[in-house]
Image (tube, rainbow, N blue to C red; front, side, top):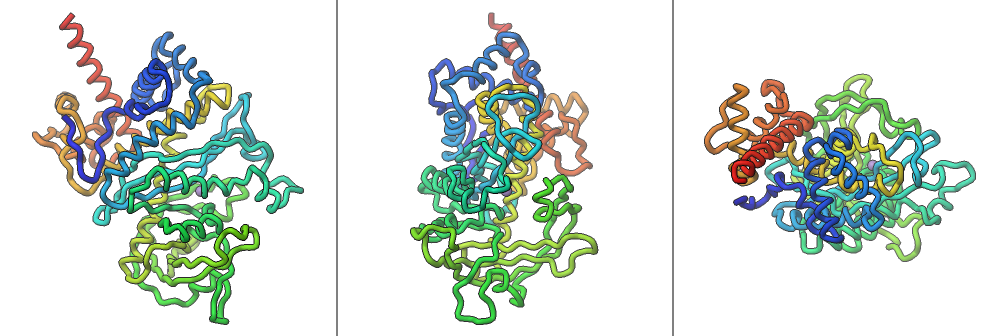
Length: 481
Ligand SMILES: [Mn+2]
């Protein structure tokens, strides 16, 4: 029996459950679950490797091309499981929204523009993670809403004005508002829900609606908006924070960023190396004026709290850390402000999620020839990528939780036997989750002295454990027949 933990959901064993709620014929649900279980063992291998025999492989291709299945149906199934996890979670639930592009080479049917040289499609995801005040390491809970689309024209085409873009049906900023609305509807009853967005999410229509409807958020500011102020010293957002006293200091880890950003984004995302940055934060409330692009049904003014995080003494030749965050969370005390910063810092998890889809599950290498089949493969990849992140997060959790709450006794027993065979550290009688995760990683080739395991070694070790379990079950059924 698997016990339910109070704050952390144990679902690392049966990935196929993610499709329990799929709206399809029983036969199709069974197939999808069989595929998910096989795929989970080798997430980044080719389809012939994953679906190991001709009949399985053919059934998989039939599934990818089945017109009665689509991306929304598959995502809804996983989203309903995510919703349950969010509702069971007792701390804050952060919902991180972001868009990613998926690029494919060769001839495929139904793809659109990514940029001048690349074809593919875009996906906007609302990805939930847990956050407890004491434990800074969040656990991924899964995707609650996702939307795919194909760009029919190049975005920065000459002759298409910003205004035309905004008014066209193709208006991509609407996705951010739609995402929030969908998540709010699905997670009704989750009181501690907080939306997190990067600069792309700095859209007046979106955050003014969230303020009006008391939906909590932390969004990084992009535009130097006009303020309503009695002070004649400043009328713009970026000036409001000038010269405010630093309220607190802390050191944060800044991850490396390579110079691979597309040319149009180089200025927003300059390359940098990994380092520890000493940052300060200041905060103040402001009132933002509606932009002239917004329709009159949005509030004429919107109060938000600003939190400015900056690095007063950046190392030479490094671009300093600087985030201007807009929020409707309180900013009264240093602790309040620290919390806003901590919330925004969890945003990187969605980038890790995209990485898990693209690298961990090799999604862009999939040799499917139509947009429809690729979108189905993506929907199947989403739970796999989520589980990769979950495994890693559990191996890094600071709190020591008993592994038996998360894993069947059989799996722990098999792991112990495999570790003993390979002369790894002996797994204790009642191991903690972290000990088990390190054990799994050691099967995947990880050495403990190298620090916490990455998701690749964890996933390899985990696939190995699943294969052992399958072998053990097969041997038993042979015995009985
Ligand atoms: Mn983004």
